[in-house]
Length: 200
Ligand code: SF4
Image 1 (cartoon, rainbow, N blue to C red):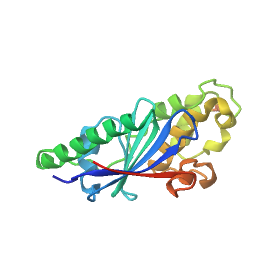
Image 2: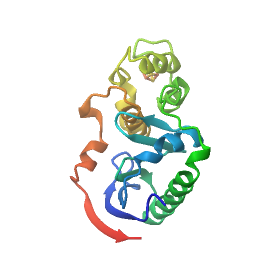
Image 3: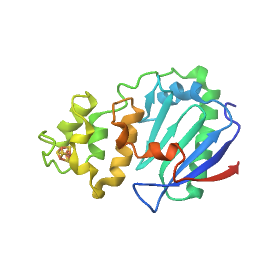
């Protein structure tokens, strides 16, 4: 067993959607050893080996595993957070137990595709960024030949939810994102949050 327990340490309002929450949970043990194995078996992971983070996208929810804590974004309520964290704890332990039978995947290259990014852009093909379509913009973004801030419609209220997920996805994939644009960094410093310890 790699991880014995988790503890929810913070529940924060989700900036993108006030009806949802962002949850930070500490884990009892360091879990980064299992990331390359999870990266090999869980579809659509984004693994950042130098930063030791692994991001799993589940529909619109964003689950980011760090070595000693896990963040959950766009979560309905505490009950849903516990459901996801319990599933993760089991997944981590089962994967760790079977790791000798899994070829570890240390790459992040093929995990963030332009089509993944396109889904999180406004999708209007308005050309305000200077590109002929959102997909063309997504290709340039993956190649780091254009900055996310060039998509001005993304920074309107209408696309708050997509923006939160996209910025965190880019950050976790190791792509450059101007620090002032990362809304979740405020949360991780603990500002605006409330502590809610809960042993499980
Ligand atoms: S500005 Fe944004 S919404 Fe408009 S085409 Fe470019 S990427 Fe798409």
